[in-house]
Length: 56
Image (cartoon, rainbow, N blue to C red; front, side, top):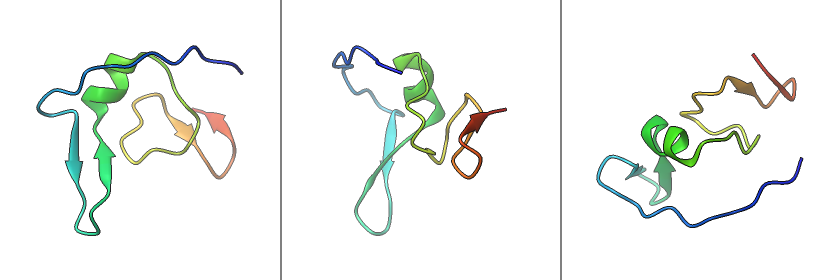
């Protein structure tokens, strides 16, 4: 599946920094982006399961 990648300006609540120092995007950001990237994101609102490779 091919996606056109557009830059989405980050706003407060779009992500948080994990204790390891990584940026973790929130459900708010994913919904604003508008599609599932199928990477198994921690806060995926689209129901993608990385283990099965399918959306629920």
